[in-house]
Every structure is written in structure tokens, then in C-alpha cells.
Length: 432
Image 1 (cartoon, rainbow, N blue to C red):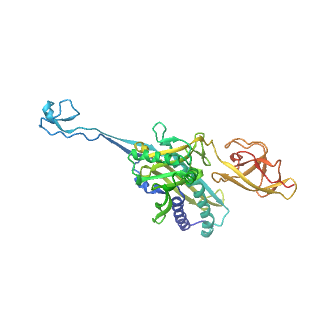
Image 2: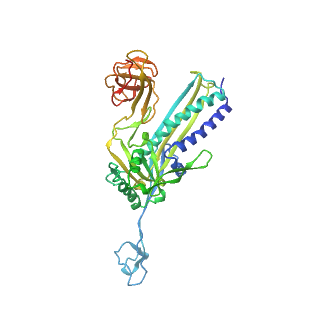
Image 3: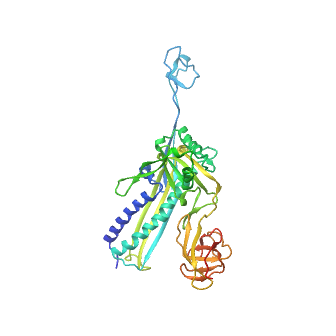
């Protein structure tokens, strides 16, 4: 049965409204949604343009023709009346300079995917029952975390140890208060309003603060307007705060610098470090969505298989004007995380026969990954992104003869490319 235009209109409205709710409520950066209206108009595809203005400061007004305050002919750029540069004719307003220029920013992240739903009941009820939860899961575990991770990485990239707004350090309970005060001081000294400041913080850092007797009295809970839902209603959340500044906790899969985008989502790079905390002025972060589109097609236009296609295209960036980068302060961990930091953990039980084991579950951290195959062996596998070699292909939930009770585990895609692996051997239960 082919989908009609009315069918797609209904499911499109249902799904896009759902998408708005997911992005606002699940995203770390829901508080930036109001800044989208600041996107400047510019017709060059793939670019945005922001105006940077620099002006000199005030000088002294010198009263004309009063001998006790008249400027000399060579002093400080005062007005030259009627071309006369004589000493008694240079006074009044000091002449200052104005510099303005347009800065172009290229929208960098052009991301897309096509999801195919094959052999389903293409009634409207069947469509919403199948496609709705699937797209919800896709936005929740793929789109939102990736964009959040990219935003976090961009913000961290605006800090620099030479400039002084990036500190590489370990957060300790005995020094946490002083370390946080350094961030507050940086923003205050650079003219950032405390009312416009939020603190992005890893959960590890937050736990250290909670265990610190030094900062307990400065941590509280406050109501914070986090954005708006799909009906335009303001979303107000009760979240922790430090000295009145909201603390927004970064999930474990998006609390690092130098994100690396791949053809299957995102991961850490060789330069990535964990973020302890970042003070940011929310008024100087401009999210740009040049394309944010979900398109669906039914079998009235698909000829290669029976089913439907969902195309999602997101072309986005986060713009931080150069002159505003001093409105960010970052504390990052001393040690590097390591490239492709995606780890596999398993649960297992003894199998029904002697020497057998059953892997009952496969889990990935810091974020859940979709995978096609699971392999185990007694020696280490290759790196993430390489092709799996050797090992035993196993089926989760089915018994198999374990070559040992300490095994390495990897998950791969359908072509055998490693997506994640156990950092070391894991213990499995084997029937005696």
C-alpha cells in the first residue's frame, strides 16, 4: 500500500514536533536555542558573516580659545579648525579611530544519514508505530549527543593556555573552590556579566565538588529557564548552581575536547582531554543550522525495495566571534584520553554444557553503539577503525565453547570494521 500525501503530512508533523522536544529537553545546549535568532542574513551558501567593530576610547574635551586648556599644535589629534594648525586653533573634540570589518565563518559540519524501513505495514498506524520510536531513538542517541559533543569541542577550542583562559589541571577536593574562583575571576575581569554565565561541568568534577567541604556552602539549587518546548512554552529546570551560576552537567559521551567525526558518529581524537569545567557567557555562542531537515519517502517513489526511506540532513556549526572568546574559561584534565575511546563491556553466565558460556549482553561506553557482529578471542584485536582479524563470531544469548575464561571482545559493523573493543580481557563464566 502506497503512502499518500496526507499520510506523510500527518507523520511529518508528528515527528518534527517530537524532534523539537527531544532537542530541547535532551540536549545539553538547550539554553542556546534563543540565540538562533541572532544568525545574520548572508546569501553566500555555506557561510555566515558577523560584523566586528573596534573603537578608540574617550579623550579630554578642550574648550576652544581658552588659553589655560588650549592644546598645542602637535598634541593628541585634536580638531584642526579651517585648516589652521596654529597652536591657538587646535581644541574641542579629540579625533579618534573606528575600525570595522566583516568576518566570514564557514559552516563546517555537513552531516546526514538515510534510514531504510523494509517490509513494514505501511498504514499510517503502522508507520507511526515503527518509524516514530526508531527516529526518536536515532535523535536521542545519535544526533543530539553528536551536536552537543561538537559544541563542547568548539567552545573548548576558543580557550588557550597562552591567552590564559585554559588551565590544564587536576580537580581536587582541597583546591576545587580556588580553581572555580579562577574561572569566575577571568570572566569578571573581561567584562562578562555574572547573570549571563553558565558553568559546563563533567560529572566527575561535580562529584569532587560534592565531596569537598571547601565549597559545600557555595553549591545550591536554582530554577533555570532552559529553552522552550515545541509549543513555545518555557522549560524551567531545577539544576545545581555555584555562587548563583547554573551548573549544566556534561554527559560522559560529550565532555571532552577535540572531537573526531566519523562516518558512524563521533569519538575522541589523539588530542582529546576530559573537560573539568568551563565558564561560558551564553550570549556569545551562536548556533547555526543551515539545514535541519527530515524527509520521508514511501514506496510510491521507491523502486529498489518495498518499504520507506527517512533522510535526515543536518548542516550546522557553533559560531564564537573572535573578540568574544575571552568570555570562555576552561579547566581541562592533565592526561589525554586516547583516540577512539569507545570501550566494550559484557555480561555472561555459564552455558548448559561443560566448557560453554553465554554472553548475555554487550554494552559500550561512553555511548551506545549499533553493531552487527561480536567477536571474542584470547589475544588482543586491532585498533578501532581497522578490520577485525581472527577470533570467534558469537551470538549474544547463545552458548558457545569459550577458548578461555579471560577473553578480548570487539564489536564490528556488517563489513567487519571494529567499532569498539574491550580495553583488556574480560572474565566470562564457563560451565564446569
